[in-house]
Length: 340
Image (tube, rainbow, N blue to C red; front, side, top):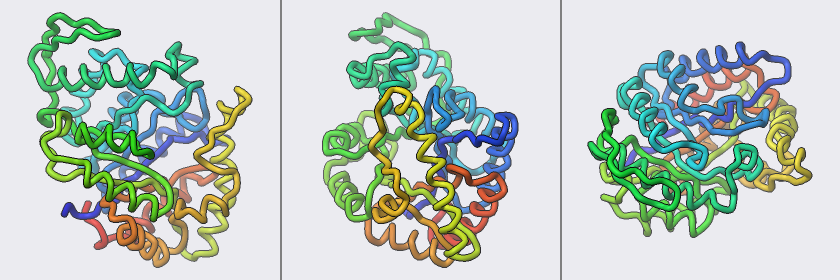
């Protein structure tokens, strides 16, 4: 069995009282500290036209973070494949993998917001097919000296691949899952996966995925056991009461940022409820003192059977200083529980 690991997920959410300049500098500071801790990887989400995501170009953002870190792995969760020309993305991935000395992890997906895709002129209806074709081209291009492809959208008779990734045949690929269909899609392609939901639901998905998954798949043939992870929002303070107070203050701000683009189009994203207590009842938060956080982290691994815990430590109204302190306390709390 692969040793349990903890990673960090980040939307790079905008703070109302902070400039983008300070936001980006703050993330570099945050990553320098994370690089010293027990965290295995940092994953950034890709979002567009919303205060939820101020890193709409994961490749550009990660290229900066590479310069501030030495050990922690870095990646996307996910690159929205329908929005990329596959040849350009192949070249960017190869650059990032070498610039990071082989620390790149690559999430792929179609995106969950029809509004973000639509504003780019991409149809949500056709996004899955576009994702499938782009992923096929991506893998061909990363693993071959010459890329040949003919499909519904792209036709590449013979493109020379002058850049190749440092990790062979490709950086590890990831996919977000939540349904039997998405689990099977990922398992057939040997993808590492991230899900969400209560511990019990994660346990069911982890068990099902292990039954479906076989090593030596077409996309991650170098991986002998997949990483099966789940997402949790987290915050650590010296006491349970202090941590809970801040989390309750921060969540409504996160929720409004999450819903902003949806509300602009007279709809609502349903993956997060507006009420903190309703969400907390589903194991979604790891909030508390260091002792409580360690206990909840241990509980996560014991109850889910997953081997990867992905925590978001900066969200809503959590300030830069609060996030730095929370990160340090979280790292101390789980030291010895996981391997970096």
